[in-house]
Image (cartoon, rainbow, N blue to C red):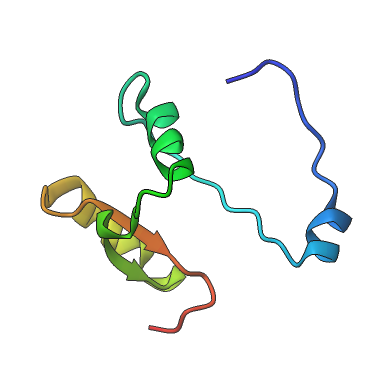
Amino acid sequence: RSDSKRPVVGEVYQVRRASLVGSQGHSGHGNFPRAISAMATGMDMTAMITKKISLEEVPENLKLLQTDKEEGKITVLPWREN
């Protein structure tokens, strides 16, 4: 992480119809830059997503991620209905 802060200007997202996506977690030293590099080369990352859930399904799936080692990456789609 950087000690410096970067401002987020909403107008840029609005004009470009862009979205801002955040992620939290730690998968080991150096893994994040390697994953970003792989994505930049066009590697398809969708195979790593084991499930797509709604915002309401987050609590039960957080427990599942802690116990079920078959789950890899769960993507939360806030606008998705159960």
